[in-house]
Length: 376
Ligand SMILES: *Cc1c(COP(=O)(O)O)cnc(C)c1O
Image 1: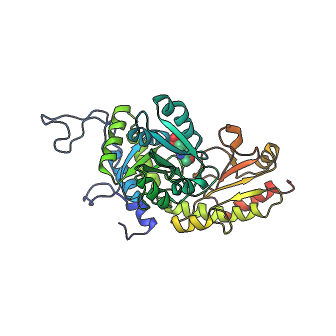
Image 2: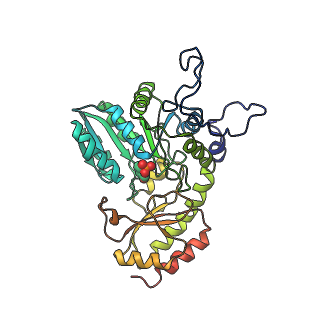
Image 3: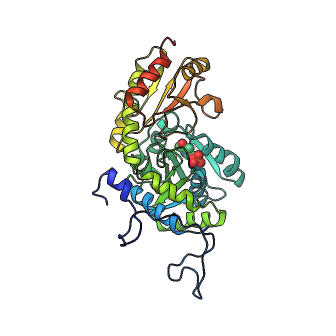
């Protein structure tokens, strides 16, 4: 498995021994309770109740876990996975360090829920966390939560350096790996205790599913997160798990096209007089370029840039046919999200996150160029 390339791993990750007569990919098993024999539940590997686990979920989790290099627990959404990772690690009185520039709802989770339970939350911007860690300012933290590349500003931090400092300070490290995907970055190999992802995004990548996951190599953390899932009931159903598994088979192909498109789109944007602040971590000269090239395994399709104002973004969107106004990212469609409309990110009114889909590069570039033409 580890010697295989990304295409092979996307298709074959988590597959067991082939059974003659069995389908290549099992169909979903739709059941809440399962027949119990006269044995205790699970005594012989028999399923009992699907909130705890079910066969379709196990297949999906073993595939995602194989890509992450750990054991995976899947959740109904990315936020459910992040909540599980955080709540399974912290207790009242603990200190948690979160990115100040990360996914908005993660900050809401901290502000609205964690703080209410007596957890102290400190916010550090992604480009600053390494210096904060080096100064010893993680002392007393129970959990350091990173998001790299950060969404939507696409800043990158050094996972291995922060993990060393955090572990020396007695803290656990979790990484939100959503933007990178498990093919683009393996936080567990870089020293993180937990890697989490919104699989709503590129991992499943068709804009038709909500899913999330946590992976770890630590059996105690795995058990704590599994207990959290059992107790809170955040388990994805069989149809979601099956569709997630089916969708991730093409992850390598989709990422490759999305990254090709992103390189061309970032160049086009950077050459436009209507655009400033183009960010794509794999573009030479990007503030994240050097670290992303060293730490990450491959690029993806998320680009950010700044237009003059809200009106400029509206004009652009009204002129393009292929660039659809939508939030979320990582899907097969190319989309543009004006982040300031949501009110959660510290970005200017004309800041956009572009998610390059898998359409033809030339079509996307021609369409976007037409949208930008004449804008200032
Ligand atoms: C979308 C996203 C989430 C939340 O995922 P949901 O599946 O929408 O709950 C968390 N982190 C990042 C970085 C995201 O982009």
